[in-house]
Image 1 (cartoon, helix red, strand yellow):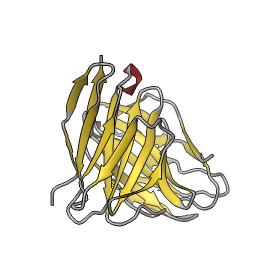
Image 2 (cartoon, helix red, strand yellow):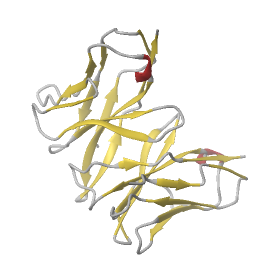
Image 3 (tube, helix red, strand yellow):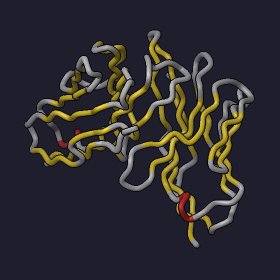
Length: 114
Length: 115
């Protein structure tokens, strides 16, 4: 079945460091890909998405490119802030039986220190 | 515009009891999906409702059920609670039927603890 694999955390960075969180997927068909962020005590917020190969999603300085050839959707940010500390989930929209649902990776916890 | 509202935020129940969780989607949204989040299994899809009909169901036992009302509000029910049902239950709403491009808006979740 469809699945998403993320790099294990936690990822600990100093403020202004570069961030990359790896995400690869397995899917039949052509899914859309998403990054969601979960701040402590909160639900999930959509960070960015890409709906077809070579699309780049971007938001709040984060970006990710849909790479069909490597089945990847890595999240990147050039300079992280303390406020970026959260858990990041990579997800794909999976269609089975004609209906779609989100399939999530395990999540990667990011801790940014001043 | 109010976001997705889930009530209650926290719940403690005893094994064997049943529980009902509520979700009010964003105004105008007609699709509601439910997800279970646990440290061991991560985020797993429970079911999706659209126009009061269950469109899709995840791989959970029949103890997990749900429904949607004409105003799009949704409830999920878990009967005969087990310790393993302790989790954060997240509700997500979307404007129309959930498709490959749909943006889902999540609530803050209900933290259920079974003792």
